Length: 215
Image 1 (cartoon, rainbow, N blue to C red):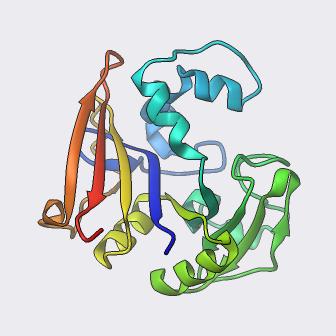
Image 2: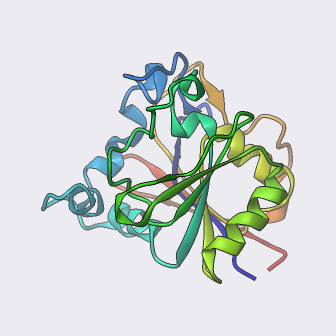
Image 3: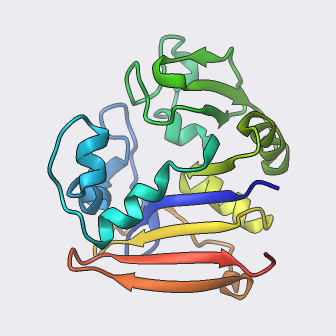
């Protein structure tokens, strides 16, 4: 069976995966872009955004695992848009006409809407579903490839709580946000279900790789 994978999911030292006060001009709220500066410096990011250059060290090696072997993605409503996006029929996500997913993407929302087909192979489907139900749909669409869980932190937390994650790559950055949406709430003793490896890099971040023990 295909695996459920999380890649490049970044959290602060105090465990927040996004800041408070998310808005259309602030996808990560008061955190701004501070959670992702490590990625912006990598060759992976430069190439994905049509540029060149960037670092080619350990941060890049982790970042570029984002795409290979992925056949579908699941994300939460807060990753797709700011609060209230369901009331804007023209809203098609943060990423422009050609989003970086290039697969079917299943957006979990209590207010589904018709699917949106974008450039580059991305089609957004909107579901009101449990994690297990969403995963079943995504696996069907993935055609035997793995399913990437894209976030935000509430969705990742829900999938972890139900034991549905096979591989999780977290990046802990050396900032303290103080408020926002925390990843770890309600996940006491989660570490017992995973083998965990940590790699720190010169950029100051720590890459945490969680591999489910049941596999």
